[in-house]
Length: 354
Image (cartoon, rainbow, N blue to C red; front, top):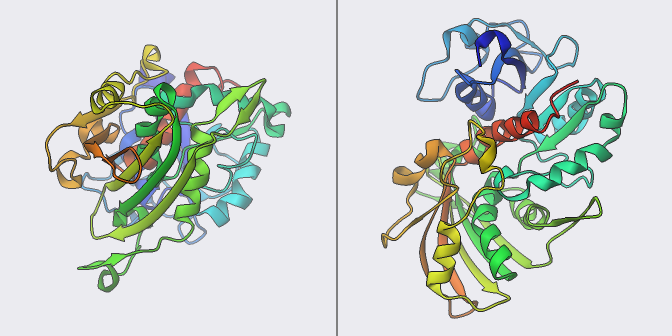
């Protein structure tokens, strides 16, 4: 698609960690082009390179570096908005954009559990997009809406669980996370707190994992979403890793399954939207690594350009049935990359049209 026909998009919360990842991933995107950046009042009016404390390994794209940061208000913004806001700010700002007719694709937790807001991972639950049509913003003249992606800590786990739930059924899930410091944003966790240390608490993280898992793996019935009914318990830890959330998981299945059958389910996992050729969709949704010491964040998070979930160490569990390790890139698959993939799905399904 030539650049003259690309869809202009905005980034709300553009100067933060996830906002920067949006800028990076949208550079040279075949369908979308960043046309608007917004952040807090202290950043409004500044050139982006002066407002953002850039922390990624690639440079700020030249065109974006000199773009002026706007105030975080709907006026003058393009119709399609990617949002990377703190939940408290999002609770107030995101409905204003939707009410003004914007399609808001958000990484915030503020509306993830709203019954009319889809919580989408396109490869596993694209049918939940139907919830958009129940939103009052969509029914209004402006036809705005809000679509969310999940919390970074449940993203990879939900992808790992989806084919097992489909083939064998899930009864119980227990997950212990080791979450990267980039998930805390910038300036994030103080070095004296995290270096050589593990912090066994991330505010509201365990509650998000447990609630969002049931929505992500729920089923649509008569235009209503029925939450999944398995039990899930999560324990979340912050560790001194830059990028990549690693999780140790134990599961109890409803139907017996062998290790070979479980690995076959993962390796045979086919994306619900594979035929749509979405630019950000990984060729391989799940990669199962047979090496005894994998996955590892340093070695495996960039598989599928950061969009593939890597699983390893499947073995019998003496309390439940099976246990294994899951790894996903928390700011790509778990944040900006997931939102961009959702936007691509919305475009193909016609939701970005006025």
